[in-house]
Length: 301
Image 1: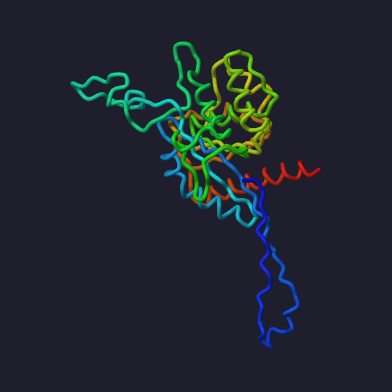
Image 2: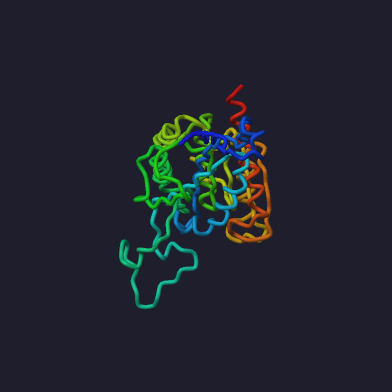
């Protein structure tokens, strides 16, 4: 993990008279040092790490290709949320006539997960701590593929400082909360959140993220989580919105945009999904490159 430099190859040896005039001229290695960029990829409600990776595999490949000239090697990691959903938790699900869905029964064993659950009656999010501790376990090296974590090509599951986060839908909300918590200037007003905030900060070595990318995300509305956005999120953020998104209302996504300092907002002509074509991968790559190089330049000062 971390920075590594590819060793220069020695000049090829040759006895050819045609090349004798260049025999004593050393070759110049113009390749840039390789720098790994570790990125958490947070899936949406009802998805899993494996499913989210399958849907964004093309984006992963395009991103790696676009960042290669800058010497940046993205390691995409796809953890799975800790809360298993039952069929009745899925929007539009209808139980078959004559069947009973028992809690923990066979009908509930589907590969659909969530980072947290919304408690409409009490206007709260349940299981936020479980979701955050799942991320903290991964960052500290205690999580892994046994927890449903998928990794990009050539990557290894295990602990390591995270450089950025990409989240979709509920994963976008989670990405915003994680980004804010890692900044260190947002302190929980409810004691119940103190444990997971310390856990994620310790897991990332007390270091904030360099960037956050949010697709069709939204802000956390419960009052006990308002501290996450006061003051506004300072980490650079890129927001992708779908002009035809009917799942997350535009006002909810705009609410998260408004809670970030200097957000970059792009709108694609589609619905509730992550656009993976080159047209939308290139601005993502440019944003990540700018953020990583900007933080590294500040560190050298």
